[in-house]
Length: 293
Image (tube, rainbow, N blue to C red):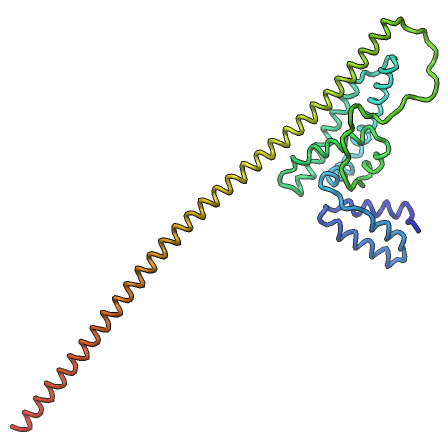
């Protein structure tokens, strides 16, 4: 028995709002609550929900915080798809380049917003930038994932669209009859459309390269920081070893001094005992001499 849609939606809203490290515990609490209410089908469905990655969680929080921007992104993706279809068919309309730039700006804005949420959980969120960007780009052109993205229910980041990948097909209805352009005009239109598509793909590729370069720089910085920390620790360890060796020498020297002091004390004690015996002997002789007198 499956759970009612509203129950599962409320469950997704609840568990995907908490940070990933608290997801499992929150899901367990919700499953138990549903079982206590006798909703075993809903409990089973909730148990199947997967823990989100940090990138997916960050996108979820940004989507919940910026619903209007997300709606604008979906609309921009649709405009881009329409521009592409019109360009390929030789019809006038919004250029692929202009539509692509609009979508790119929205992807960048939403990526920055998601990185702000990622920074709440990670001291260095930059390595997640590429996965976040890819998720927004995929959501902009794939209507099948848009409900989950808009609701903030993603468990895993989405793969970046390959090529143009608009996920849309031309309308099934026949186009309105119009005079056929001359062959050279049609060739020019197709060439321009191909040029617009190539520019858009180049822009997407440039974005991917820039993101990869940022990730590389971040990794190089982290590696350099780690190397410096290792060097500092090794220097501290060498200093500590030198200090330990010096302390060992001082300990041995102090032990030898204690041994010598104890020997001197024993000799002094024996000398004192000898002097004391001599004094008693002298005093005893004086007493004997006095009695004789």
